Image (tube, rainbow, N blue to C red):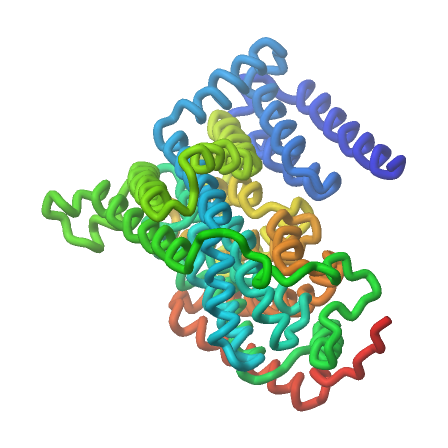
Length: 538
């Protein structure tokens, strides 16, 4: 505790010294479109890396930008940070729509869990899945289908598939990896998701949803992670600490380590008193996806004669997702009332529960939007764009790989992808928007991939923690077994981004990355690392 306090104190002292230096070197008139305009995001990144806490880091970055803008007038800084920052971004109609969408998602998650639809699906799967590989493939497929939100994924897949994987002797560490690897990596390539909405909100001066869709083929970490899960199961290969856990699981020990906090948990399938059935999970998810797609194309003018692709590209993500999710929520409520799986009072009780579950996401988004507003007011876009234009062409080709690695480091240290999006994406857009649109798409994708990779590896990530809880796995076991897998995909992704910076054709680079992944896994299996001698359980 004392070491942490000392670390935080030194970090904040360093920020104070930097601000004092800036006060003597700048004024409100001279800071515009200079290197000082980059100070707020630099402070936020540095503090996040040192303290591993994103909320205070973002706020200090915001207030630093307000101080620079006001010429270090406290009154002016307060007015700028709150009037032109927090209040402005929260009152923006697009941003409000995104926040409403998140809250509706949280409510639907609470409703489906309360209704018992996921538990019913678990009972069905328990009866129909016959093999160990089948249990893992079913977990992957279910995780990929629940692409609306990573919280929803972690909260659902674990409770659904844990009894099934236990029956087929799949280790809890492997289940936690499959849950985690189908959460953020799937959401970041799904246009109808809270992640797509958040990324779209960080892009200004461009159609955010159109950029998101065009960046999907270049999101190599997410795509390679999904490929890797299937390859591990189909090739029957595991390596590192995961190999030990899997060997012990085949002998009946699902935990490997002496610490097994959920070892005495009663089988949920034998004690499920809920009325829900499989359709109580499937119908809400299907309705949500269909309604959101219809909402998106409606906002893009599809029903006024615009083509489907053009309507989707020109859609307003905020309006479309809010309309679609609201209709999906209404259908879910009517379904549960008609089927009497939940009472009206139970349904209403899920409203505040859903809101509370999304408070961290709402807070990160709001602060990230405000930091973006501060850097915009200082002319950071114009300054960075000027620097990029002056850069040599050869260096520009390596920018996607560099951005990917920066995103990895920042998200790993802070445990959040969304905070990383908020800091990096506006800078990437301003740098490449007018200079090289193609490279902008690749770099945005690299930013998203790096943020997801760092979040995937981070032991303090909320998604990582929820994946451990969903699988009822010791958290340290989950982190230690998952890290080698995530690092392998990260290394291949970095190489692939180097290639993409020169080739700039997604469907050439992705097969190269997949080929590298297959060859490395074959090599691991051949040399016997996948058959490490298992430790004796205690």
